[in-house]
Amino acid sequence: MRGTENAMRTLLVTPGKASADALRAMLDPRLCPAIDVAGSANEARQKLLGTGYDLVLINAPLADESGCRLASDISKTTAAGVLLLVRGELAAQVAEATGGDGVITLGKPVSRAQIAEAVSVFASVLAKLRRYETEKRDLERRLDELRITARAKCLLMDQMHLSEEDAHRYLEKQAMDHRMTKLEFAKSVIRLFSEG
Image (cartoon, rainbow, N blue to C red):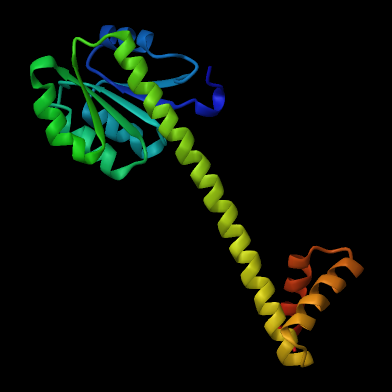
């Protein structure tokens, strides 16, 4: 099935140890290996300040609020997936109120299969987001390299009166001759002409 790359740091917000134990038993330990528990909305907010969670499961109502506002706030201000469990007769109304914020609402009583399906959806979305973040960082790094290389070429063109093509070849050849990457040599060119 899924490996640890889809593992989610999970916050369970539920009033009482019995409900926490019951919900924890419904979560797949491969997808949710690290589960913290908060007994109230205030405690959950405190935990969210110090830890980045991937999934927050809220078992409403909570001792200090209904849980709907907490769910919306978390979804709006963090990247965590939010799963809100409410009484069955309120599920449609709550889903309409919080769905626009990205909260998934399930009516209670809820089965292990329903929880597993919702958590699996969150894990899939999280895996995709992580891939996009990795691709984004890689593209940003490559773009930064292109900017540095272009700046070095411009300096070579200006200072050494080379054509763009010659400046490009010069960077590549000198990088090979000095056993440096093109980026490292481009940075040295920038330092050289910036100092002088």
